Length: 336
Image (cartoon, rainbow, N blue to C red; front, side, top):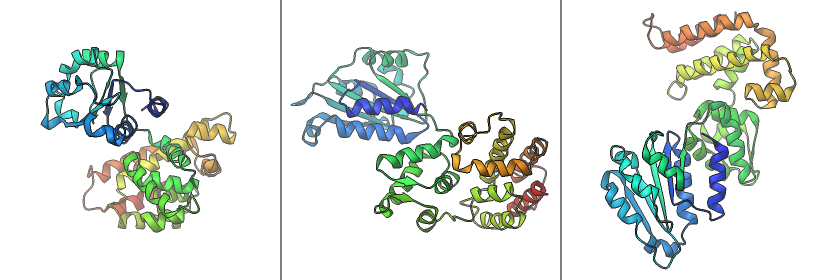
């Protein structure tokens, strides 16, 4: 997902520059909903919506009915909006929209929500919409970019977040922007006076332990603190619904890849390291410490080890062993 492109489109909408068609597609539904809601808010006043807003659903309509609504002229307004939700249910017939897309009514703003699927860029509809409208492919954001996304979202309302708190959210929620945004909205209400999100605030209101989480497990492993690492393992395993072992293994895998990358960086200035590893500069010192404990040769063996334990966690080659025991065995072998 190209966030710069999306931000440009959002800016145009806020400046009352509209496309006749917005085809919003892809896996990341947050921006599909956000842009739809923004257009719904910006294009028409509440009074104008009474006569000039139509909402259709893919399961309950067809392309001919959609086009019929789009070809109507607005009443006492410059525009009308037509919103097609769940358009993916019309995926077999969606190409039939091609003729309208090449000659859209400019007083209509058609907003199509095509979630979890994408148009074939080789086909006529995609090419026709590109000529006069806007196609936005909302791909899942890479997890290493989520911390900056969180910071940017909070900055909009003049909130800040501590680096550790930011990583706690990412470790817990991954790259699901809808879930993250819901939690951020909750945290903003709670911290409306201080306007700062802290690890303690997250622990008290979301239920993520500030001391027992995947981020702290990685730190303990990086420092070769076996006692602390095993305590965190026990906590994560006792809360396996919130902390599936596969997610923990994936996080450890990515962590050691980053330490491996650190070893290969020539310019080890704080900002350069942070940029290459995709981390907050605040955490560079932790990677420096971990690199002293794990050589590139060590890391190569550890990466293979984690892959092997990932297979074991899925039942390959083992039986009657708990995820807690697997994780403990892995941590002991990594540190020792």
